[in-house]
Image 1 (tube, rainbow, N blue to C red):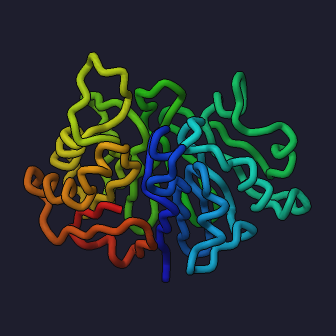
Image 2 (cartoon, rainbow, N blue to C red):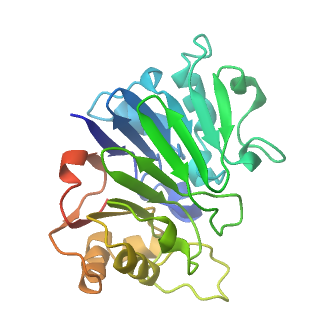
Image 3 (cartoon, rainbow, N blue to C red):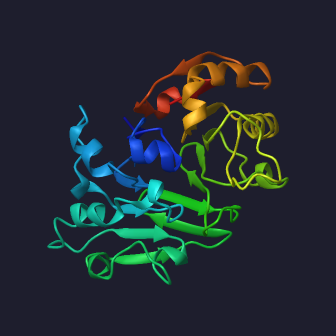
Length: 266
């Protein structure tokens, strides 16, 4: 298999993360001979070792933090230790916003020396780890420094991390496969102190980009109560995408499956 994405949870935000109503462990991206872990939130190391498939963090080539909030970065330090075999094998690169390592950092000083390096994100940045090239096209609107990621593989795959919707957001993510963090079903107004995406925002983004595949994740409490698979069905009704709707709580998504014109809720 040339590549796959493994989700170690599809929950998001503080209430779901603290109660573990859905797991919040982030995701593992494998492409050819390269492995990256993205957003190791609470329970990442536990979910990884409990997985039916074999995932050994010593095989990771890097770790990505889209932003330093707990539900995205809680397990970053233990994941660095695991990737470097307890610090005895200096290896791997950490990719993160500057405020994750400076000011009020989430990455501890003592684990930083275990890494081959730390690369700081910036708007319009381009990065390469062995077989995987990726970019951070635009800074998102969120209380801390936050970026989405475009992975330039055999297909372009984007992760739109936490952000409030803004008019130019879809312009930056012209990709084949779109992974979107969607927090809630109810629309988020300008007066709401919630810098996240809602279902109506996802509909606007999907209708503009028209990707082959959309993967919904990072569900908040209210969206979970409404059942994400039913929410995905509703999104399909208002988008130009066709194909099947497929719901899964977690699991492995193969690139061979990402060619389908499908909306997934994962």
